[in-house]
Length: 64
Image: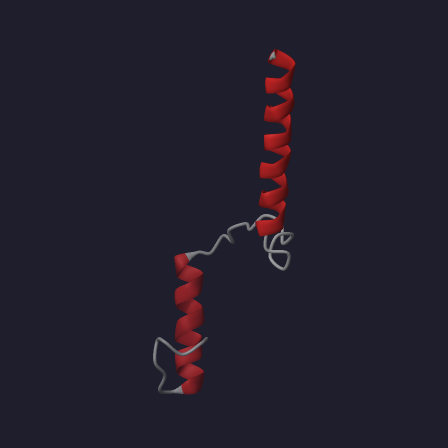
């Protein structure tokens, strides 16, 4: 009877893993790890000021 329980457990785990693979988003699953960029506040402020000087009026929601 113990062997039957182990076989049932193994089949159940295979089914769970199969369902997990079926649910995986194939488009976005293999992008890899996302890493943070190191950005300095001073450098970002300089970029914003330079953009403001060259474009005159702008809104912060505009893409720089």
